[in-house]
Length: 82
Image (cartoon, rainbow, N blue to C red; front, side, top):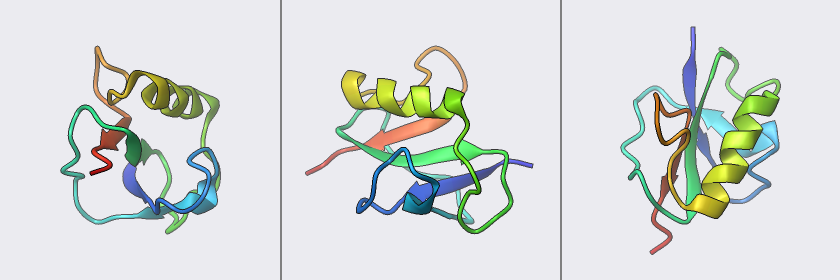
């Protein structure tokens, strides 16, 4: 079963230690300048690994400033920096 993990805003968004599992669905915007949360098939409090496909979505979100993928169910949400 998949879970949402919130980015702590302090570490590298490509590293598992920068995320913590949350019990709620993120209420992030579709567009923004920083990673808000990612969806992973992981039940740990901190994800064991971030798969390559999700890393690609994170990088795409950072340059496009839009949650990813933009044409399907989103696995990476971004939020406003302001």
